[in-house]
Image 1 (cartoon, rainbow, N blue to C red):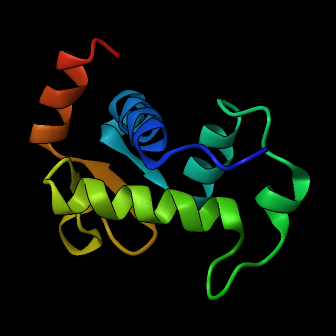
Image 2: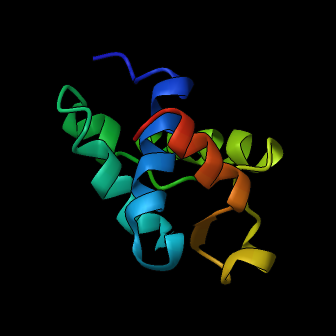
Length: 101
């Protein structure tokens, strides 16, 4: 399967963060939880190392998160709970409500 488009991953990422306790999740949990929404991902895509990332899938999710951070929907680690934790912002919660997630 081709990896899902960035927009689809961003959508799922916001949805999971919005429902997570305190609006935050550790990145490992995000990778696993989000991958369940894309059952066509191959084992290789989910597990084989990719550059400096854990896997192709993790790399794709990291870029989706970066785009959400740049648009103010997800907080940077320093302001969102520490290294490895991804936290939805107030703006991200508003976007989540718009999409009725």
